Amino acid sequence: MNSRFDRWVFKLYPRAWRQRYEDEVRDLSEELLAAGEVRNLRLVIGLVGMGLAVRVRSLRQWHPFVLVSGSVAIAVAVGVILVATNALGPGGSPSLAAPTFGTIPSAKGGHLDVKAIPDYVATLGRNGQVVGYVPRGDLFPASKSSAVGGVIPVYGKDLKTLVGHMYPGVGFVSLGMAPTAEPCVPVTTVDNGTSQSVACPSTTVSVPNVAGSSTPAAAAEISGMSLGVQVISVHSTVVPSGHIVSVSPSAGTVVSARSVITLENSLGSDNG
Amino acid sequence: MTINGIRGSSDRSVLVLTSLAGGPKHGYALIKDIENFAHVKMGPGSLYGCLSKLEEARLVEALPSEDRRHPYRITPSGLAAVRERLTESARIAEIGLRRVAGAAS
Image (cartoon, rainbow over all chains, first blue to last red; front, side):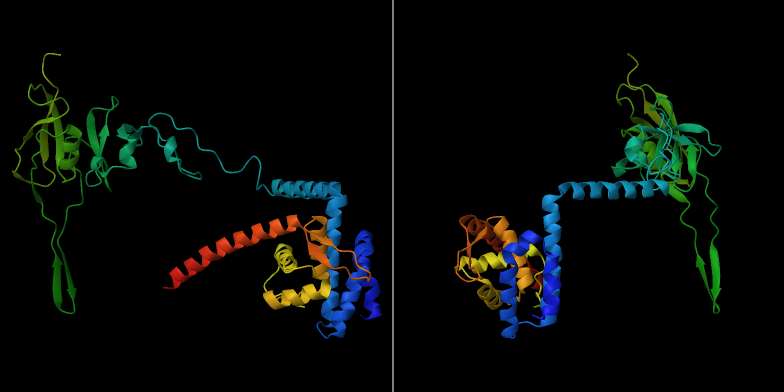
């Protein structure tokens, strides 16, 4: 090895290591150089790299305190910087107000936690007043059966009495009213001399047979057909409570859209 | 003196232990042997960096010798360590090669 490099390369290594290995390594290096196995510069670079690695290793061995305190100091410095730049600490993401019964937590600026929503969620009318309550399962439908055609039933305070429905794109429509939709106007377009018209969808619908079904489901189904629903309760010894006794106009009748259908809901027999 | 693809000191240790598992050697023989079976050229710096670590861990030991260069020999715990390490690598290699063959088809 070039005696110039020779002297300082080995100074990188800890004394104990040098005592044990320096002679061997030097001899081996000479041998490899002489045999043309390795080039001087690469040899030196390798020895320097290893020297530093061995140094670090010995540091770890004999001065664990240095390493530990150094790491702690760095961690503290990083923490100070983070707090100073407001990445951590108070004033981070705003916490959502805990939802009270019947309120939909605001998702503004926060992460909406579905699990935090109570079982029934208040439905707000156009003026922001509470008009009824919707089962949580309907707002985030796990089973599609409860929201027919996207129309979600809304219940009163007792969580049983149907008071209306939520129509997609329309909002809350109370029972007995048909959802108001823009009256459809047939569209005629003229394109290169040929006229095309798009007709309105059919404005008549046939009343479904919902006798015997559960009242909320029947009301939802009929509402989903753009028909208004009105529910009156009667006693019945035949039909169980909460189910439909009869439909008026009767099932199969063709009615125009937005007509009101009257459903008779059973209260059970008159004995109780 | 380039170490092709083998970067970590633990990989180099495995090479050294594997070489010594074939019989005691001194530095030059170790380098040539590793070059032969692994196609990796270790320099004296990295070789002795490895050997010193292995010696500290008692996985290899230096044999007495008249001249300055000591032959090194693997210890029983060194044999156990390299056997375990190579078995694990072989297991993973088998899984990996099987998957690679499956993915290519």
